[in-house]
Image 1 (spheres, rainbow, N blue to C red):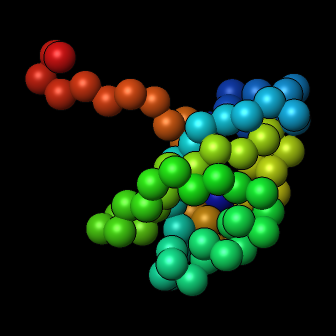
Image 2: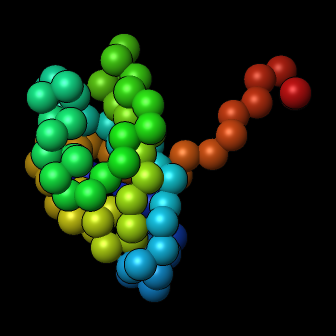
Length: 86
């Protein structure tokens, strides 16, 4: 089971139809997993080849399903990142 912050998991349960922007971290080849993600209704926005992750958008209901996949190790909220105080 994927590592997910308890508050994020609660948000998915409380808002199963809402869209969430997430970063997922995977084991194995993400390219091979992309088809599985798309079949679940996940929109892949960007792939991070060096870290084996992806920026995705999906519903809370779908996110709960993703969290049960053995090849997904961690899921977190995708949010803007700033460097050096910018």
